[in-house]
Length: 84
Length: 228
Image 1 (cartoon, rainbow over the protein chains, first blue to last red):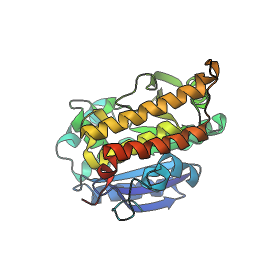
Image 2: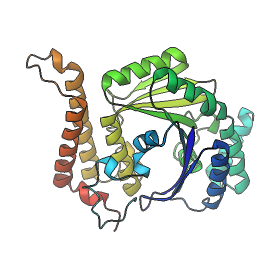
Image 3: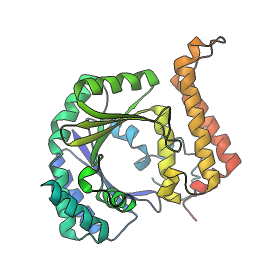
């Protein structure tokens, strides 16, 4: 299993951190540290996902990774701020 | 942790959470770890499908406790969960049936026939015995849900419950009905007199087209901009 830790800013719809881990316990420790840092930031969501492959995560939680995967590349003009 | 301890933690999280409360919440979430480490990989292999597990974020838990007060933390069903995305309704039905055959299921919530403000999917609420929520979606249902999430980021969580700008709500409802109609053609079309059928690729292409048209007509494109 692999894990990915994400910090997502709802206000700007931007993924500000994306870290992949092979050790789920390390991922969970890092999540707690990030949540403690973000406690006073109501727009920041700290997300931890686990899967057997990175490709699976990119499909099931596309909104954190790829606007094109949403079919929304036309909806988010290149000039607009949005997730990378 | 006892149920009373969990609920006292929930009460603190709802008001003014401190660092120690987040550490305690982390300890509570850690009790679900055997499900992530053992049960989910085993199910993925048995069902021959990709399952992506997610730990509910502290922010989502806090928001839910505030939004649904006085809900107890111990009664929150989706502290831990997983998402499965498949191509067709038939595959969605198969995965749902196989999940129910392998695990103790407390409830199946089928939101395909009775969508929640446009949200369509099948949720399987399981017990391991800790509660665990599976979301089983078709690709088209998933595409709609991701778009809805993005719009909710922009306009607020109420959008998921029919709140927010009316033109955005209307656009989402139109797209949801379109997905439902396409899925009807996938499953029941062969029984129709005109023999109309549609496969997943055609359905996804059609969804892209209708998304573009609805966006133009309703101004949803503008609603999705994050630069204002």
